[in-house]
Each structure stands twice: as C-alpha cells, then as structure tokens.
Length: 224
Image 1 (cartoon, rainbow, N blue to C red):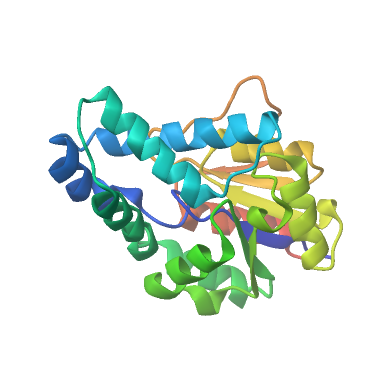
Image 2 (cartoon, rainbow, N blue to C red):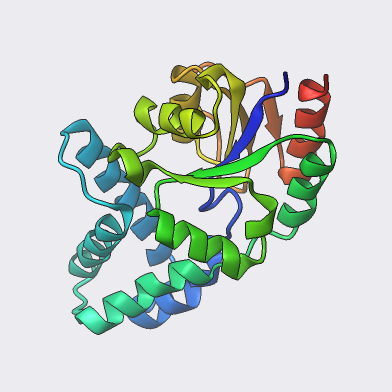
C-alpha cells in the first residue's frame, strides 16, 4: 500500500520571505526575519528537550522579543501581534499547488503536519488557497511535543490510521527529515534555497530541488 504523503507547512509549502517587508520596517533590515525563524526553532527545540512545552505562537513572540533586544529595538505588544498575525497570510511557493495536485491525481493520500497550532495551520492553508488539497491537517501541538520529537510524527500517523512506516514526510528542513526518519517514517527532502541535509543523519531516498521534482520522485516510488 502507498504511504500517506505528509507535508510540513512553513518554508516547505509557504514562503516566509513574504514577511521580509514587515521585518524591514520593524528592524530596518530584512535579515532579521530568517534570524527570527531560526531563534523560534531553537526555542522550540529547547522547550521540547527540557520538557517545558510552549505552543509555536508563544515561541514566535518570545523569539521576536529576543531579536528586538539584540538589535536594541523596542517593539510594543501591538506591533508584535501584528507581525505574528502575518504568519497566517503567507503565499505558497509557485509550484506547490500543482505539485500536490499531481500527487492527488496519482491516487495518493495527502495530509499536513506542522508545529503551528491547528487553528493557525488551518488559517494558513485556507488563506493560501490549498486547504482543499489535504485530507487532514495535523498539529504537533495536540501532543505537546513539537517536531522533530518522535511523538509528533507518530501521533499524525495514528490520526491518519497508519503505522509510522506508512507515512512519508515531505519537508525542507534537515531537522524535520531527521525526526521523521528516526520516528520510523519515510521522507522526502525539498532542497529550497539555502537548505541542505545533515551529513550526520541518514539520507532520505527522495531529494529534489522543488516540489515539482519531489512529486515526480514520490509518484515513482509510491506507485503500486
């Protein structure tokens, strides 16, 4: 039986570069945006490792405060809230809808797994115009263990009615690929600009430059 194709959302399907104008207005430099996202991920990993859970939105707000402090900026609560709200209004990368559509046309089940709360994830996918492509949206928030913790992938597999081995995680982050593989899932890496695989982690059997290439490889690998 073909695996369920499970997509990461932020930076795999949705383009965070759309936030750059906001970060340039707030910090005078768009480079604050990738620094913020990396800090948010670092805070998420620390929260997971130390077993002190915070949802992704709370972590995002905390990371914004840290970036502001580093840069000597004073951001008010209203400005912080406004910047975080824009996470719900991100566009997809150009090839995303067509790539997922090809997977659906090939008869594959399609779902999403994100560290964002379910409310935010649903809003993101609806705004991007691709919610209808997914059978189900899963959030690591429901088990209070953010990716790459194994519990997040296993909970998604359970919600989809399959074993972990019956899931293929598609992501543009090396840490997400590592988490999925070590939770017993298959994986496919989307090598977005600047994203590379970790040489200390087993390599997934599918690697492509974008979702068009990855979709072709998934169809070839999963076709009965």
